[in-house]
Image 1 (cartoon, rainbow, N blue to C red):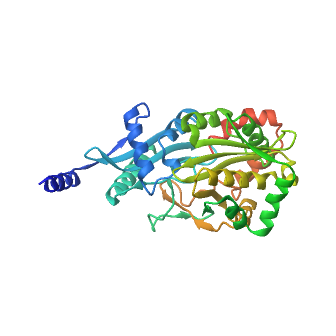
Image 2 (image 1 turned 180 degrees about the vertical axis):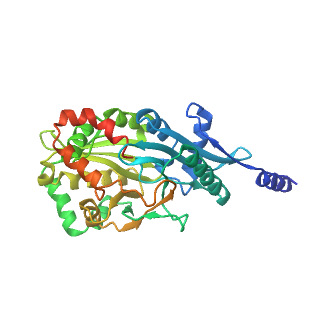
Image 3 (image 1 turned 45 degrees about the horizontal axis):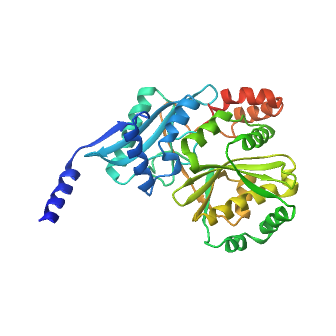
Length: 361
């Protein structure tokens, strides 16, 4: 009898209408429901978490549209979106700016379709140039696809030494060089040391730095799931740092920085090994090295660790443009920005950077 009642209840719920709503970041219950869905949905990533709405909206100042599809009070899919209006690169609706992953995370085809239709309606209402979904898998073969980027991820062995031996020989030698140089890693309680290394590093590469308050917000919003690791030499001098995200059984080293002597001391190689070692010891099963542009030094560095590139499916629905935007160094405007930025004094660059970088996404 009970089984029959439960089956009828399931049928009734399945026949209920599917609705698409916008998340209110001040509604704690709604935020909790959103995050519970993200934690359980196989298609979801760290960048689908509700906390990004406050960070992108309140810290970076972009208008957000965090959509969720539900039926009978049960969430079936989410789609975090933000509008980025840039003088250099136009007016866009993106899932999600400042994230390598995004797009729809759903456990039903109907929910995914409903969310995308609502996203397109919002895009048309806002008059954006295009809608960009940073998917892990292709959803629309007919939409233009940006194929510049790939991602790198690999399962970790449960034993620390097995992970060391899995690193290709030449790269393993660099890690051992860092160990011989007496380097050590420390977990920081705040982002102070990390930010100093990060800001100096991006300035040398000609890129505006995100503001320190952005990283402070990441640590405040995501708590223990956002961790800063700093590599220091025998005298305690900071050489290299990385800010990582933890999601389910994965670690994602996401923002990094170093000082000029780090290369000679193999501090960057040691840094990622220490993150891998510490992650293994805490039971993390997947090391997600994030995205890189094909043909770059970052791409080669990750391959040297034994990681193989995996495709990313950045899909575009174009409205007021005829081709995919190139918000990267292949764009002449972007190259000009890089060359100009390298010439600015670091103090001026750190002050001006937040006003520029928020529009790059």
